[in-house]
Amino acid sequence: MKIGEVADLTEVNTKTIRFYEDAGVLPPPKRTASGHRVYGMETVDRMRFIRRCQAAGLSLQEVRQILGVHDRGEVPCGHVRRLLDDRLGRVRAQIAELITLEAHLEGLIAHADQGEPTDHDEAGVCWILESDPGRQEAASAAS
Image 1 (cartoon, rainbow, N blue to C red):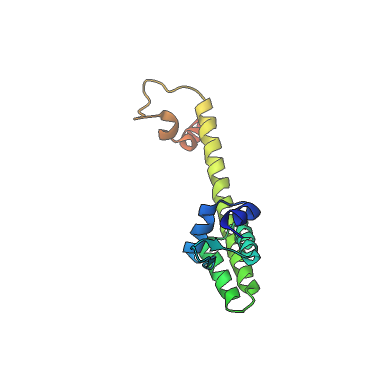
Image 2 (tube, rainbow, N blue to C red):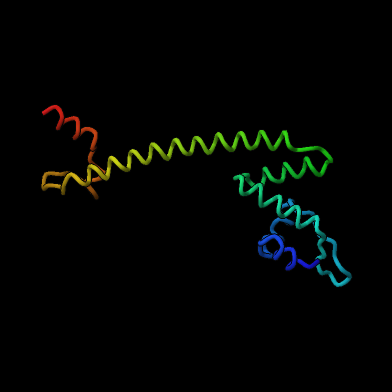
């Protein structure tokens, strides 16, 4: 089959297929006498596998590792499990960072809702970001 047919079956464009060939996750296709690429269903299956890896958040380097293990005739599932565990850990760390950022942003917005700056505010650009809402809340509570 031609590259356009592979693209249609895998819902990627032809540039992506060529990129994956260059990146080493798709083997070079066979060529006709005139130099046109010729693909088999194994390319479609491999493209679908690559897409599943990407949907799980795996990098192209990780996909290349998995396929390398497979191409050596070994079963890569143990390696895949370790990669997925690692990815889940990174996602959980990102979630924790986002929760902290969310709380910080909520604090800044609450601080901004308290009022406009006065003439004695010494903000260089914007009082909302340059003043310390936590310090001001503590001073108000102490009064």
